[in-house]
Image (cartoon, rainbow over all chains, first blue to last red; front, top):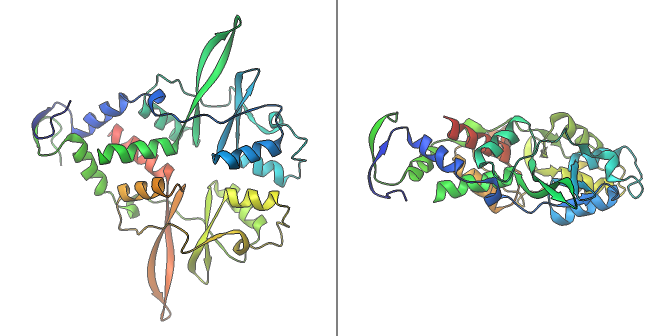
Length: 159
Length: 159
């Protein structure tokens, strides 16, 4: 624990102390619940999910394994293009791996924030490889977004 | 300037030093350019602007004065509802003041982050009251979003 009052050694600066603190915060300790649909779900169901859960991006799985993401922007494009929302499956409009930036639950908060900024995305799926029934699948276990980072920023400053 | 090496007094904690630093960063020094449309613009033009500028929220003005905001979600709702995108004006689907959270350019970064989290919005219009041709108008001069906060977070940790 840091002394709240007194002198303390700053081999580096106060900023580095904060950076160190942030690096100790793991993605798995600050992530949100992921909102997941299957590739076969309709665009309509996807949009309803997006409104009900009030998220900007939904993660897509096929046979339990992560295959990509679909965003508010993808839905808007699809609906504007006149697609039949009840017939077109999410699999048709989603962005597929490996063209999706993901993050591991063991990574730290700073790495997550840097990935979000550098790749200009709103959120990152938190994924891990697991073996299920003898084959390897990529499981989505969380979601980390600019909201999580903004919340962390406020908490760090308020502490 | 903070010493990079050595001892320094911490009447409060390192966290408070960062909080102090953040409070010295003003909204006007970190805000982005606002994307603005008029109330008379069509929903279609609004969506095109949203895609071209790649923002989640557009600010709306009438006679040069700020009157509200319109988000990706509002557009999606409107298009799904079967509205004629070329005929319906933005004024019909926007969220109007005073039901919009705004911020002053002189406020600090922490206040902006807290407002974003507490009101669960993606961005805040940065506004100021000015007098033009003898009457008072509310001018939108910037935009501050979770992206700005996330970028600031990364910069503070990397410094």
